[in-house]
Length: 53
Image (tube, rainbow, N blue to C red; front, side, top):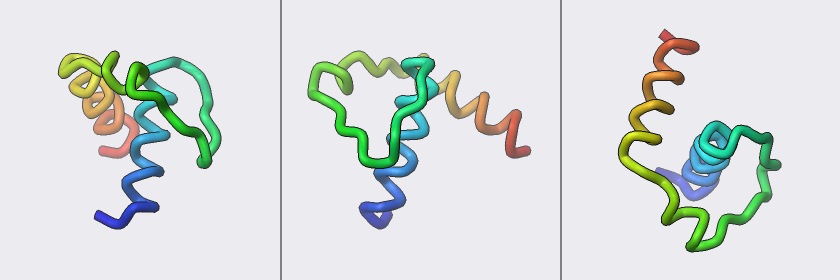
């Protein structure tokens, strides 16, 4: 996966996860990333599936 695509997906996920809108150039700390749970990723993939069937 290209770095720009990876970053776009990460920003999209973190916006969903934190319930706020991050800009494309947002940075996330290690602490932010460690808060991600498997359940959170599952909720996000289900959400994406529902809006992009």
